[in-house]
Length: 281
Image (tube, rainbow, N blue to C red; front, top):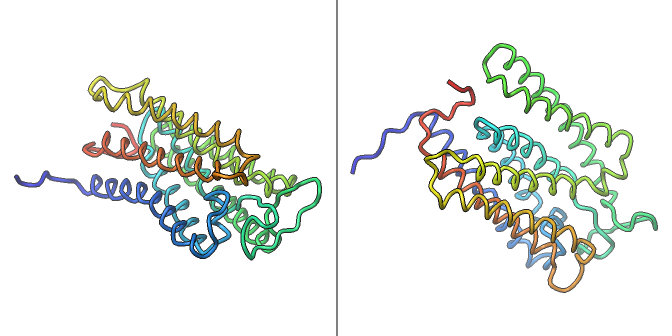
Protein backbone atom coordinates (compact mmCIF):
# COMPACT_ATOMS: atom_id res chain seq x y z
CA UNK A 1 0.00 0.00 0.00
CA UNK A 2 1.48 3.38 -0.99
CA UNK A 3 2.17 5.81 1.83
CA UNK A 4 -0.34 8.60 2.37
CA UNK A 5 0.78 12.02 1.22
CA UNK A 6 1.86 14.14 4.17
CA UNK A 7 2.20 17.90 4.05
CA UNK A 8 5.16 19.67 5.62
CA UNK A 9 3.02 21.19 8.43
CA UNK A 10 1.59 17.74 9.20
CA UNK A 11 5.07 16.22 9.39
CA UNK A 12 6.31 19.01 11.66
CA UNK A 13 3.37 18.72 14.01
CA UNK A 14 3.64 14.93 14.10
CA UNK A 15 7.29 15.17 15.09
CA UNK A 16 6.35 17.60 17.84
CA UNK A 17 3.63 15.25 19.09
CA UNK A 18 6.09 12.38 19.26
CA UNK A 19 8.63 14.62 21.02
CA UNK A 20 6.04 15.66 23.63
CA UNK A 21 5.12 12.05 24.32
CA UNK A 22 8.77 11.11 24.73
CA UNK A 23 9.30 13.64 27.53
CA UNK A 24 7.65 11.24 30.00
CA UNK A 25 9.92 8.23 29.31
CA UNK A 26 12.84 10.67 29.34
CA UNK A 27 12.05 11.56 32.95
CA UNK A 28 11.50 7.93 33.92
CA UNK A 29 14.76 6.76 32.36
CA UNK A 30 16.69 9.63 34.00
CA UNK A 31 15.25 8.73 37.39
CA UNK A 32 15.91 5.01 36.91
CA UNK A 33 19.53 5.75 35.97
CA UNK A 34 19.94 7.91 39.09
CA UNK A 35 18.53 5.37 41.56
CA UNK A 36 21.78 3.34 41.79
CA UNK A 37 23.57 6.59 42.71
CA UNK A 38 21.17 8.24 45.19
CA UNK A 39 18.64 5.51 45.94
CA UNK A 40 14.85 5.74 45.92
CA UNK A 41 13.97 9.32 46.90
CA UNK A 42 10.66 10.59 48.35
CA UNK A 43 9.39 11.86 44.99
CA UNK A 44 10.32 12.16 41.33
CA UNK A 45 10.80 15.88 41.93
CA UNK A 46 13.56 15.12 44.45
CA UNK A 47 15.68 13.76 41.61
CA UNK A 48 16.33 17.37 40.64
CA UNK A 49 19.09 17.10 43.25
CA UNK A 50 20.57 14.02 41.55
CA UNK A 51 22.39 13.31 38.26
CA UNK A 52 18.91 13.14 36.66
CA UNK A 53 18.59 16.94 36.89
CA UNK A 54 19.73 17.74 33.34
CA UNK A 55 17.36 15.31 31.61
CA UNK A 56 14.55 16.15 34.06
CA UNK A 57 14.65 19.90 33.42
CA UNK A 58 15.24 19.50 29.67
CA UNK A 59 12.17 17.25 29.33
CA UNK A 60 9.99 19.77 31.13
CA UNK A 61 11.12 22.66 28.93
CA UNK A 62 10.61 20.55 25.80
CA UNK A 63 7.10 19.59 26.95
CA UNK A 64 6.24 23.26 27.41
CA UNK A 65 7.37 24.19 23.89
CA UNK A 66 5.47 21.27 22.35
CA UNK A 67 2.26 22.12 24.21
CA UNK A 68 2.42 25.71 22.99
CA UNK A 69 3.02 24.62 19.41
CA UNK A 70 0.23 22.04 19.45
CA UNK A 71 -2.52 23.70 21.47
CA UNK A 72 -4.72 23.94 18.37
CA UNK A 73 -8.08 25.69 18.34
CA UNK A 74 -11.19 26.04 20.47
CA UNK A 75 -11.55 25.81 24.27
CA UNK A 76 -8.72 23.30 24.59
CA UNK A 77 -6.33 25.81 23.09
CA UNK A 78 -6.46 28.25 25.99
CA UNK A 79 -6.23 25.37 28.49
CA UNK A 80 -3.16 23.81 26.86
CA UNK A 81 -1.53 27.22 26.37
CA UNK A 82 -2.04 27.86 30.08
CA UNK A 83 -0.72 24.41 31.00
CA UNK A 84 2.42 25.09 28.97
CA UNK A 85 3.30 27.99 31.26
CA UNK A 86 3.98 25.74 34.26
CA UNK A 87 6.51 23.02 33.27
CA UNK A 88 9.32 25.62 33.08
CA UNK A 89 8.50 26.69 36.63
CA UNK A 90 8.57 23.05 37.76
CA UNK A 91 12.01 22.82 36.15
CA UNK A 92 13.33 26.13 37.52
CA UNK A 93 12.08 25.85 41.12
CA UNK A 94 13.20 22.61 42.76
CA UNK A 95 11.01 20.90 45.31
CA UNK A 96 11.59 21.98 48.91
CA UNK A 97 13.32 19.26 50.94
CA UNK A 98 14.10 18.38 54.54
CA UNK A 99 17.53 17.46 55.95
CA UNK A 100 18.59 13.96 54.99
CA UNK A 101 16.01 13.46 52.24
CA UNK A 102 18.63 13.55 49.45
CA UNK A 103 22.11 12.06 49.97
CA UNK A 104 24.99 14.56 49.98
CA UNK A 105 22.66 17.57 49.75
CA UNK A 106 23.01 19.71 52.90
CA UNK A 107 19.80 21.38 53.99
CA UNK A 108 19.47 24.10 56.61
CA UNK A 109 15.94 25.09 57.53
CA UNK A 110 14.43 27.33 60.16
CA UNK A 111 11.86 26.09 62.64
CA UNK A 112 8.98 27.89 60.93
CA UNK A 113 9.62 26.37 57.49
CA UNK A 114 10.59 22.75 58.08
CA UNK A 115 11.40 22.37 54.37
CA UNK A 116 13.32 24.55 51.95
CA UNK A 117 15.36 24.74 48.78
CA UNK A 118 19.02 24.24 49.80
CA UNK A 119 20.96 27.52 49.77
CA UNK A 120 23.43 26.54 46.99
CA UNK A 121 20.49 26.14 44.59
CA UNK A 122 18.77 29.46 45.31
CA UNK A 123 20.91 31.60 42.92
CA UNK A 124 20.00 29.18 40.13
CA UNK A 125 16.32 29.60 40.94
CA UNK A 126 16.62 33.38 40.87
CA UNK A 127 18.46 33.28 37.55
CA UNK A 128 15.82 30.98 36.09
CA UNK A 129 12.97 33.20 37.28
CA UNK A 130 14.59 36.27 35.69
CA UNK A 131 14.85 34.38 32.40
CA UNK A 132 11.24 33.13 32.72
CA UNK A 133 9.94 36.66 33.31
CA UNK A 134 11.98 38.20 30.50
CA UNK A 135 11.17 35.54 27.90
CA UNK A 136 7.54 35.38 29.04
CA UNK A 137 7.11 39.14 28.66
CA UNK A 138 8.77 39.04 25.24
CA UNK A 139 6.55 36.15 24.11
CA UNK A 140 3.42 37.99 25.24
CA UNK A 141 4.52 41.13 23.38
CA UNK A 142 5.21 39.18 20.18
CA UNK A 143 1.89 37.36 20.51
CA UNK A 144 0.03 40.65 20.94
CA UNK A 145 1.56 42.00 17.75
CA UNK A 146 0.64 38.83 15.84
CA UNK A 147 -2.96 38.97 17.08
CA UNK A 148 -3.22 42.67 16.19
CA UNK A 149 -1.90 41.95 12.68
CA UNK A 150 -4.34 39.08 12.18
CA UNK A 151 -1.54 36.51 11.95
CA UNK A 152 -3.12 34.54 14.80
CA UNK A 153 -6.81 34.00 15.46
CA UNK A 154 -8.43 36.53 17.78
CA UNK A 155 -9.15 33.86 20.39
CA UNK A 156 -5.39 33.88 20.95
CA UNK A 157 -5.98 36.99 23.04
CA UNK A 158 -7.33 34.75 25.81
CA UNK A 159 -4.08 32.80 25.93
CA UNK A 160 -2.08 36.03 25.91
CA UNK A 161 -4.11 37.43 28.82
CA UNK A 162 -3.55 34.25 30.85
CA UNK A 163 0.17 34.26 30.05
CA UNK A 164 0.52 37.92 31.03
CA UNK A 165 -1.30 37.25 34.32
CA UNK A 166 0.87 34.22 35.17
CA UNK A 167 4.09 36.10 34.38
CA UNK A 168 2.93 39.04 36.49
CA UNK A 169 1.99 36.84 39.45
CA UNK A 170 5.26 34.91 39.30
CA UNK A 171 7.20 38.19 39.21
CA UNK A 172 5.31 39.65 42.15
CA UNK A 173 5.65 36.51 44.29
CA UNK A 174 9.37 36.31 43.48
CA UNK A 175 9.84 39.95 44.42
CA UNK A 176 7.54 40.24 47.45
CA UNK A 177 7.40 36.68 48.83
CA UNK A 178 10.67 35.03 47.87
CA UNK A 179 10.60 32.42 50.69
CA UNK A 180 7.06 31.38 49.70
CA UNK A 181 8.16 30.96 46.08
CA UNK A 182 11.00 28.68 47.16
CA UNK A 183 8.80 26.71 49.56
CA UNK A 184 5.69 26.26 47.41
CA UNK A 185 6.57 27.24 43.83
CA UNK A 186 7.42 23.76 42.55
CA UNK A 187 4.42 22.02 44.10
CA UNK A 188 1.92 24.70 43.04
CA UNK A 189 3.21 24.80 39.45
CA UNK A 190 3.05 20.99 39.16
CA UNK A 191 -0.46 20.86 40.64
CA UNK A 192 -1.72 23.57 38.29
CA UNK A 193 -0.22 21.79 35.28
CA UNK A 194 -1.92 18.47 35.99
CA UNK A 195 -5.18 20.22 36.92
CA UNK A 196 -5.27 21.98 33.55
CA UNK A 197 -4.53 18.72 31.73
CA UNK A 198 -7.41 17.05 33.60
CA UNK A 199 -9.76 19.91 32.70
CA UNK A 200 -8.65 19.72 29.06
CA UNK A 201 -9.40 15.99 28.97
CA UNK A 202 -12.85 16.66 30.46
CA UNK A 203 -13.53 19.38 27.87
CA UNK A 204 -12.48 17.03 25.07
CA UNK A 205 -14.92 14.41 26.39
CA UNK A 206 -17.86 16.78 26.86
CA UNK A 207 -17.37 18.78 23.64
CA UNK A 208 -16.37 15.87 21.44
CA UNK A 209 -17.18 16.29 17.73
CA UNK A 210 -19.82 13.95 16.33
CA UNK A 211 -17.23 11.94 14.41
CA UNK A 212 -15.09 11.16 17.49
CA UNK A 213 -15.19 7.43 18.29
CA UNK A 214 -17.03 6.56 21.49
CA UNK A 215 -13.97 4.80 22.92
CA UNK A 216 -11.94 8.00 22.54
CA UNK A 217 -14.58 10.12 24.26
CA UNK A 218 -14.78 7.60 27.09
CA UNK A 219 -11.00 7.50 27.38
CA UNK A 220 -10.83 11.29 27.77
CA UNK A 221 -13.44 11.15 30.54
CA UNK A 222 -11.64 8.33 32.37
CA UNK A 223 -8.33 10.20 32.12
CA UNK A 224 -9.88 13.40 33.50
CA UNK A 225 -11.34 11.57 36.50
CA UNK A 226 -8.17 9.54 37.10
CA UNK A 227 -5.93 12.61 37.01
CA UNK A 228 -8.21 14.45 39.44
CA UNK A 229 -8.23 11.49 41.86
CA UNK A 230 -4.45 11.04 41.67
CA UNK A 231 -3.82 14.75 42.17
CA UNK A 232 -6.10 14.98 45.22
CA UNK A 233 -4.67 11.78 46.71
CA UNK A 234 -1.07 12.92 46.19
CA UNK A 235 -1.72 16.29 47.81
CA UNK A 236 -3.56 14.64 50.70
CA UNK A 237 -0.65 12.28 51.28
CA UNK A 238 1.95 15.03 50.95
CA UNK A 239 2.70 15.02 54.65
CA UNK A 240 3.44 11.31 54.38
CA UNK A 241 6.02 11.70 51.62
CA UNK A 242 8.69 10.10 53.80
CA UNK A 243 6.50 7.19 54.85
CA UNK A 244 6.98 3.64 53.63
CA UNK A 245 5.70 3.17 50.11
CA UNK A 246 6.70 6.64 48.87
CA UNK A 247 3.10 7.81 48.14
CA UNK A 248 4.16 11.06 46.44
CA UNK A 249 6.68 9.24 44.25
CA UNK A 250 3.96 6.82 43.16
CA UNK A 251 1.43 9.61 42.67
CA UNK A 252 3.79 11.63 40.49
CA UNK A 253 4.63 8.56 38.41
CA UNK A 254 0.95 7.76 37.83
CA UNK A 255 0.21 11.40 36.94
CA UNK A 256 3.01 11.38 34.36
CA UNK A 257 1.70 8.13 32.85
CA UNK A 258 -1.79 9.62 32.65
CA UNK A 259 -0.40 12.74 30.96
CA UNK A 260 1.38 10.52 28.42
CA UNK A 261 -1.88 8.64 27.81
CA UNK A 262 -3.72 11.94 27.34
CA UNK A 263 -1.13 13.06 24.83
CA UNK A 264 -1.33 9.77 22.91
CA UNK A 265 -5.10 10.31 22.65
CA UNK A 266 -4.59 13.87 21.45
CA UNK A 267 -2.12 12.67 18.85
CA UNK A 268 -4.46 9.92 17.66
CA UNK A 269 -7.31 12.43 17.40
CA UNK A 270 -5.35 15.00 15.41
CA UNK A 271 -2.79 12.83 13.60
CA UNK A 272 -4.43 13.24 10.20
CA UNK A 273 -5.64 16.83 10.54
CA UNK A 274 -5.03 18.33 7.09
CA UNK A 275 -4.36 21.81 8.45
CA UNK A 276 -2.91 21.93 11.97
CA UNK A 277 -2.34 25.70 11.75
CA UNK A 278 -3.34 27.87 14.69
CA UNK A 279 -5.31 30.27 12.54
CA UNK A 280 -8.81 29.04 11.77
CA UNK A 281 -9.92 29.12 8.14
